[in-house]
Amino acid sequence: MQIRSSDLEIPTNDPFENDCLDRRELEPPLTQFVTQAIGPFVLAVDGSWGSGKTTFLKMWQVKLDNAGHLCLYLNAWKSDFVQDPLVAVVGELSIAIKKHPLDRLDEDNVRKTIEKIEKTARSIVKRLIPVGAKLLTLGALDIDSALERELSAGTGAVAENLIQDYDKGKSDIDAFRKDLEFLANAIQEPNEDPVKIVIIIDELDRCRPTYAVQLLERIKHLFDVEGVVFILGIDRNQLSHSVKALYGSEFDATGYLKRFIDIDYNLPEPSIGCYCQSLFKRFGIDLLLSKRQLGNHNTDRSDLSSYLGYLMSSAQMSLRDQEQVISRLRVILQTISKDHSIYPITLSIFL
Image 1: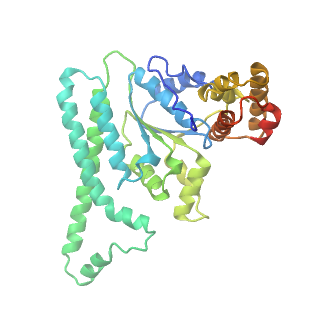
Image 2 (image 1 turned 135 degrees about the vertical axis):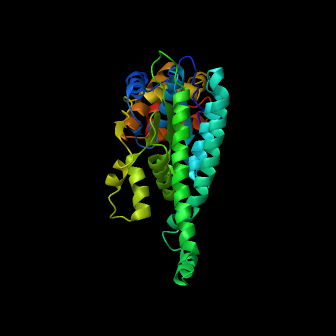
Image 3 (image 1 turned 60 degrees about the vertical axis):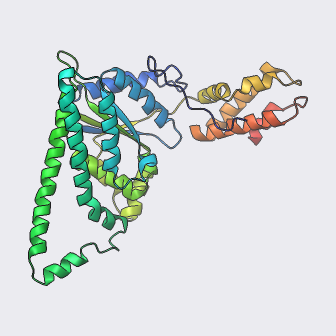
């Protein structure tokens, strides 16, 4: 018995073939913008939970790949178990660059560069562990207490080590950016439209607040490189709540997020009832109705689709909530006797 809908198939030759939310026309201007925009930037695709952001971003990712961009997708929510978000981003970048078609003359240099990036990223993460630990505990863990005791003892050695460590940290960041810029240049093709390293970060608003903030900070300080574009799939309201959970309810979360996001794009809501129609196909509702012995299949189908579509739209249900409703409908149709009427209008209200 199917409870959840299966993942939507995204064909590489036509990623929007199974688009049921009429969002195909949103892609061309967005891809054109990514291609022609100069300099690094962060674009936020803003939509409420369950509004179809993930599906749109995955379809758009294929179109960006087809346009020649080196595009990688990271579900931040599924990767927030790692010690630092930089590890997840560099890991996905390494996978993407190895799959990307490159001129044979550049392959050896690209391979060496991505290895250098991985090594430098590990060094940066090690230096950021005390900062992350203090952020995680909101300062309750005094990482620097041992250092303060040494300094107060007048040894001077710790202070010298800290200065050296600071210089080495700056050097690592400079090296990271330089190598990233080399990769951005390596994927260019002569006499072709410019292509970018496009890093799609999805589900950022569902992460642990500390992880979400760390990821934004890494983007700002490490990836601000010509030819690198970030696309964030977010629910800005929910992400603001995460920021406030970390810094306090009175904190200006809106102003804080503006430091990281250059451009906002609000994902349009789907038209009334259009998603309901597609869910009937994905959950096999038509087939179940056709097996019923009482009532008219076509009439029952029309009534269920019309009333459910209207009621779910009126209730402003998210796409995820609508999936759950149709999932319950499937369970009912599979368990109720085939020789009983389903009373489509009443059933729609109960659902």
